[in-house]
Image (cartoon, rainbow, N blue to C red):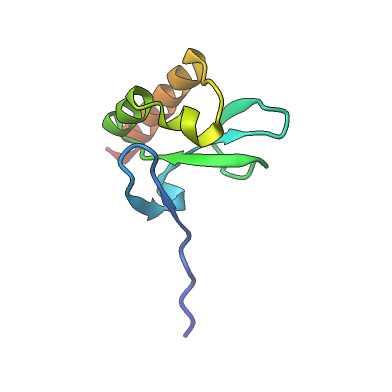
Length: 93
């Protein structure tokens, strides 16, 4: 029996490797637009965050998304991320 390999990605907040499906993806497209990728399938450069408010706060404070994408991140992206994190935390309960 062959076991399927589970893709692991590193959270920019806590720097822990976790399965890709558990994380929230933020993507920067070729046009330079940054958005929250709910499906995980948009093309572009991706960065991942744990669905945890602490990881989001740590990433925002240390400007880790700015460093990952090499550009400024607007406040509305962080608000959208906060909404997604809240929704995932509620779904886990």
